[in-house]
Image 1 (cartoon, helix red, strand yellow):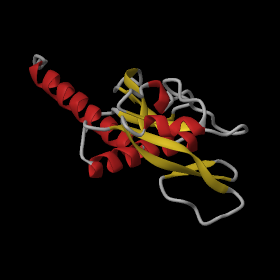
Image 2 (cartoon, rainbow, N blue to C red):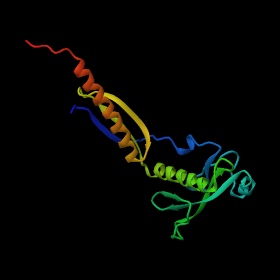
Image 3 (cartoon, one colour):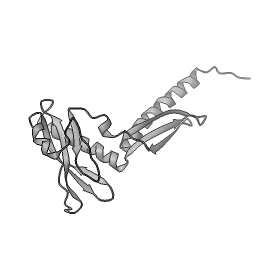
Image 4 (spheres, one colour):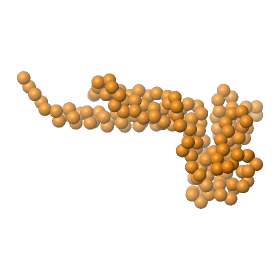
Length: 170
């Protein structure tokens, strides 16, 4: 066992899922107080019908109370929730079941982003200095798994280098 250490830290400046969204799947949200996301000229909820030929459209609901939680299903609270926008998935790129699953995956990413569940890691070597770091992992478990894989790589490399070192006796 070596003295490598992993430090998992919440990402203080994560990229928004909208930063890497593409024209095959995206979310639009309409609210004048909370979250306003538009794409490809879709700036008004009334325009959504114009997109139905090209996209599978899933209604997006939000629960807004000390934060924002998104869902493809309505929430039970009539005061702090309601329809908020849409998730659009390009038709022809997948079956309707996969489109639904893709829409749910995007909503899950947004929920991680909105709740601060975005992480990074820093690995320090035996000398205490940083040897690797990476940020922008959505979900702490995913970050921990990736950090552990990197740690195992560095431990293996360190062990191999130690075996290759000349053995000197005095």
